[in-house]
Amino acid sequence: MPKISVIVPIYNAEKYLERCVKSLIAQTFHDIEILLIDDGSTDASSILCARLKKEDSRIRILHKPNGGLSSARNAGLLAASGAVIGFVDADDFVEPDMYETLVKNALENNADRSGCGYFDSSRPDEISADGKITVLSDKNSIIAYSACGKHNNVWRSVYSKKAIGKIRFDESLVIAEDWLFNYEVSKNVSVQADTDKRLYHYEAAPDSLMSRLNDKKIIDRISVLEYICGSECGKSLGRKETADIRMRVLMFCAEESLHSGIDREPWFKREVIKKIRGALAAFLGCGASAKRKIKAIIFAFAWPLYSAPARRK
Image 1 (cartoon, one colour):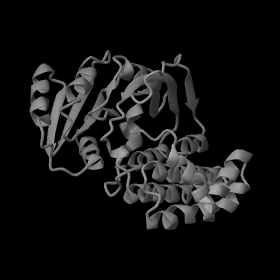
Image 2 (cartoon, rainbow, N blue to C red):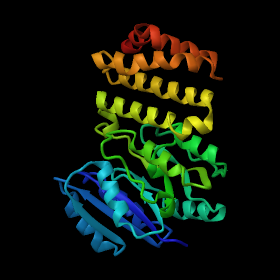
Image 3 (cartoon, rainbow, N blue to C red):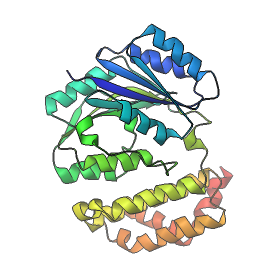
Image 4 (tube, helix red, strand yellow):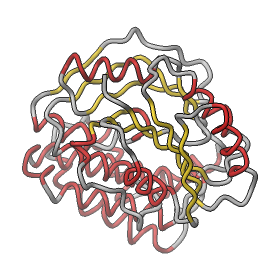
């Protein structure tokens, strides 16, 4: 069995950190390196790290000036000694058999990437699936899986260090850095294995990065979208699938902006609605449902008709 390095970026995470790290210490897979990357925390996180390290020699602590999530993950990648890499956010935790399951699935399928499902704390009624495994070995399918943006959380997968190579997280992005990272790594993945069993617990904290949306975050996501659709994705998937991905993400950005109350700002029409209009012709020619096509037309030319009722809810 290969050694796993699990990278945990930490910034002012004292509320959840002990739960997170103890879930890693309790893993049924024992050959694990737990890399705690203290990204300039100003709370008691560094003290907690030191105490937890005394409980388990597999813990390594790296202290660095605050540089953000991507910077912390990149520092972990540089320090990691394992042949397999995993990521866990400090406010989340994992099931005891998560890494044993993911490594087993990777070895049995000769996979460079092995993923699982997850629980979302904002949806407490979710139950775990039965563990069905989906294996992808066609290069176009693997790239499409990452390109579509639906499965872009790095914490739900393990990766061979070889597949990651010199790829790093883009530190200029405040959102969608997972999506871009997964897409770039997908080019080096020969086989991918995913189980639908939920093994990761995602904490949807109200003060999380995702909850504090602004124009920079929406524009970052769109810039990643345009990069992906303009590179190998467009060449390998074809125009119809690429048009579908582009419109789905743009409409998601519009709805995110609405729910965060930032769709009234001047940049929204320029950066979101204008791009939806530009993508509309290609989208109407793809295989999307009539309902989605009608919704896209409303977004493009009658946004107030959609946004006004939603604001009253």
